[in-house]
Image 1 (cartoon, rainbow, N blue to C red):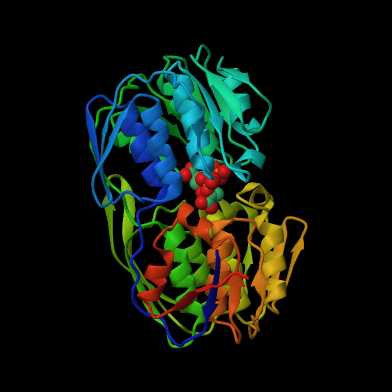
Image 2 (image 1 turned 120 degrees about the vertical axis):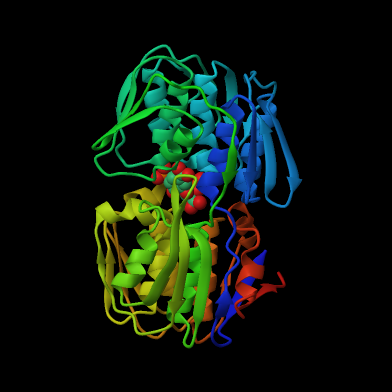
Length: 430
Ligand SMILES: O=C(O)C1=C[C@@H](OP(=O)(O)O)[C@@H](O)[C@H](O)C1
Ligand SMILES: C=C(OP(=O)(O)O)C(=O)O
């Protein structure tokens, strides 16, 4: 499916942001490992998260939907599934489930779509093998994993990956071996926060996280906060579309996820945060952005993990700013659903923006955005959504291909953008 966006004036109002994807995967998986019942409210019902729910059913766990965003999980011992587990497009699903399955001592084969089948799995296989877990297959899907965990590990999480860290911790939950993860550059810490809420004991000592003796989870209520990676499309759009003012309520503001909001501030955006509070161990709050002048800025490699999925949208904001923006340390972007570094340089250039990859950096010259191009997304949801936002600030419409993939992380994207007054329409295929 092709979608096209057009500049139609200011974007205004409250953006209906769905639940956070990282928290949604974790709520289901941790619930499936816990004793008793877990109830999840505000679950993101996107294809990636539904793949996790389906996988857990194949492991013999009861997972039920009882209302919009409301799910119930009855945890317990997992069994080896009869058929391969299809994780679709989701790196988070496959990497976290590999760790959890290993910890449960079961055997499972994992598959995924064409994009996921190209993504690197050595990073999760190597530490799990060091923990005594057995693997069949190469370093990409399909792969078979077989627990149990028989050895401890002191893992150094480089490159900073919350998925790998979570896989190691989840595998460790099923054993009493010493398990620790050191993080020279911190990645998102949702697993540590939510596992602690489920009753798991941790020691956190500077950059090192160690599993304690208490490794049993008890079922609980998880209320999922709004997804900052989805909110970024609306906040970024408001910053570059003249006359806009957009608010996002109850969005996750964990410091390891708020890099994009901080980046907007650094570029001079008219931005305010309010109602900041804690829920379920996570910081949440409201963010408001008003259109105003923006200026190019420099971002370093250390800042990337706190906005890793928002870099495509940051590049679009940079296109609407005055002067040059340089974003360093983007090697990890080459290993996402597509090579996001290459595709952003390509898509922005096609829309008349001066943009180029310089080694692992992305360099963008801001200015008027011509648009008027059809952009190749290689089925990457974030490449599609970012360019659709670009079209809202461009002189001519922007079209993206394979837009059905937006449903992997943000199935309500079009309606949510429409609620702000944006025009995003389907293009008839010839
Ligand atoms: O743990 C998570 O929920 C995620 C971690 C990040 O990936 P890496 O662990 O590969 O950095 C991120 O890109 C992904 O969308 C979600
Ligand atoms: C990289 C992403 O997700 P995942 O790794 O779970 O496929 C993303 O949502 O941008």
